[in-house]
Length: 372
Image 1 (cartoon, one colour):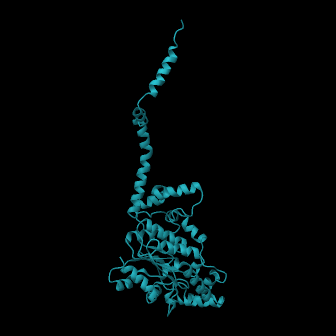
Image 2 (cartoon, helix red, strand yellow):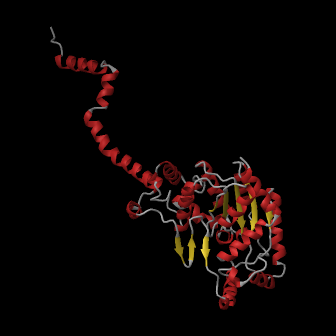
Image 3 (cartoon, helix red, strand yellow):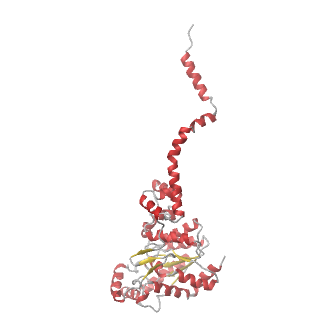
């Protein structure tokens, strides 16, 4: 008589015993103390880092994300600290130096009969896609203004997506644009992770994080004789009269002709729709160059002013949002300009007052700040 295979029997029994163990026992083995300790050791530093970076952002020691310009980081942080804003100004460097928020708020207060806040969140060298991204991010943060003043420069009429790409491809730009400018699976996944993780957003920047531990984001920023103030306005001194001719020659060298230019119609439509769809009123204005520069551009390219007017009208008609052309500052002196393209502080205050005297501009602002 054959003897039973004891070893095989024991093996089968062992297998049956293990497979027949209750599910809760098998689960408990997955969460053994040793494994939990390993997970804690790996995850705890990440959680602590995430909490720490978020705390630095919440206390304004660190910007929400790194931007391609320090001025954008400072302006966004200051705007967050200011709290709810009634009037928001968006545009490029001409709007940033040409529309004075404190002057505008003061004029609106007199008409509304209540305190009014205004902030200039313009970003130099950018265009309509960046302004739209700013508005959309403010909507996600529930910090939308009652009315937005879109300051449009002549060169801004021609500025394309490519010229805004640098701003929107920075960590800050990717955040505010909700990754809309990112291509590729890997980059998209990284961008989406940036939107939920402050630690990942600030990866690879230990110096910035260390600096944030000892100093907050500055309330003001001085760069090349221009001071970015707490309300987002870029204040500057008037240019010296003897530099006017040199400034004109430099501007004429750098500014492209308008004859073959087309306005960025779809980008403007998208910007206006982004405001309207969020319940934000819009008033768009042309921020002009200095009269000497506009005269020189007309002399270089006869019909320059007429072509610009045509571009403004085309934008306004197709978007359903007209662009007010209040003309150049009148009267103008050399002390009203920082250079031939940008206003000085006195010029910006006077230009803002000139805008307020335009009924169509004033009507939109007053109705917005008087509303609920």
